Length: 301
Image 1 (cartoon, rainbow, N blue to C red):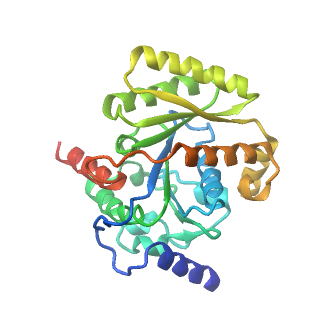
Image 2: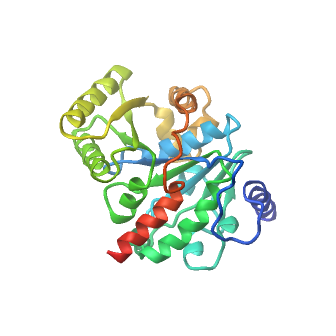
């Protein structure tokens, strides 16, 4: 426990050197980190597993990365990574810990903000309580190169807030008709409230890339016909028993099964994101600043 605590303090110093947590001011000589929201229309499509392993793939490319488990009430990033964080986002929400104190180091370039699990009240947080946490997360945006936000599944209030504030969104689906339909429902929500976002599609649990591209083509055809937002095919992950094994073992496959097909796919995905590049800065500040404003607008309305 002592070693873990010391690692936590060291990561907090490295990622966020100040002790006092206050809303950060934009740094004139440093761009804000790139925040990517990973979401899905329904549960069971492997969204969190994709996010965890993508965060690891980016960190292994020496990119400072924060993984924020924003699945309020049903968080399981810590379970998939086999860690037992001493504190979680619940402690920040309730004022018992600062964000730096709950930040858990994982390897050299990855920090995890653990979510809360089994606490129904977190699924629909009061706007002011959520805004208080988000203001602290805004500071991390100015220190990490990548922040991956793993949302809950579906179109609940908290999920919608995260998705609508994002410049970049990865929608995870599978070939199953229900997943396909719910992915379209999520994209329809994005179109209604955030049509300028860069929306990418990752098709998980496929038998081949050919199958994935067929699913993506079918979905993008419907989107182009009825919606304004544009969706691009990003990548796929084939069915791989290593993925199932890694979940049971609570060991991310990117780090523990480096030769697996799924690992190769996630490494290619990380490379594609780096090649893709960051979008130009959006008016209204970074992701978390816009998220705070959105949450408070919802509160007022």
